[in-house]
Image (cartoon, rainbow, N blue to C red):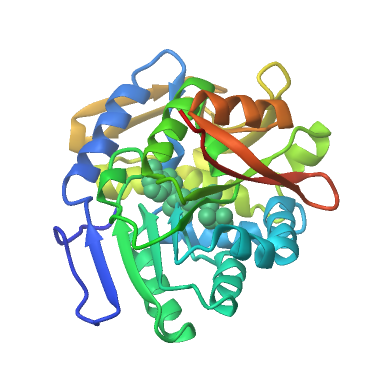
Length: 336
Ligand SMILES: C[S@@+](CC[C@H](N)C(=O)[O-])C[C@H]1O[C@@H](n2cnc3c(N)ncnc32)[C@H](O)[C@@H]1O
């Protein structure tokens, strides 16, 4: 992560930006590296892909022909946004892992057309994304207020400002799949605590399908996903003064049929001895040894509904795309 000024605020009247990453984010990367690179099976959480370069690469991934989730989720939103605006009456949209908010504009357009839109609250770990998105959205939607939260949605949800009225909390892109099952339900419970009685969660989930389609989506022919995967080593080199050569690692994407999730891994092409100087940590990879950098769980309708129910949420609407590859769900807190 880039160095951040603690709790920065932008001056424009319609934009408030708060950063909660000051120093703590550096510690989180260090802790994750100390924990994940000293295990017998090495692993790092996917949030560390997303420095400014990682965020740009993810945007390029979204445009790739093989990466159907973005196309499908956009199709669902285009088809159903008006209905969602009417059903929720939302005056604000909170978005977890907002990135460039590209698809979000479809929803903002619908809320704006319904005359209810007042505030957008992007929450993302990438500072540049939150700032750029606040600037562009306030000029695209006159009168819109943006309250950006630069932070880790696993640690900083309490900094989401209180609601000004009915709201949609959006968690798009299938990002929920990056959590393993137990943490996924825990995280959904955290999200449900953000919801008042008038609020809704709008979530995108990628569906179980032919493994060849899934693996192609995470291993594109242009090598963009491979560069995105290796970017985590670039982040370690810069932030923790490590000396990995990213080209020593192959990008691997495989569908685990037992767990029904995609795994992205980096596989050492040869024996690698690196040092993470910032942590005084030697790291050794045998030739062929792998580092798991992401899981992306795939869903069935039963899995989504089970997870929502375990988090105290009830399904209001199931919104699949026309090709049946991806689905969104609208849910709300179950009455006690
Ligand atoms: C898979 S991308 C999805 C981006 C966008 N919502 C979309 O649907 O295209 C995940 C986004 O979540 C952000 N992100 C990942 N882990 C995060 C975390 N722990 N806290 C906050 N943001 C996170 C990334 O920076 C990135 O913008």
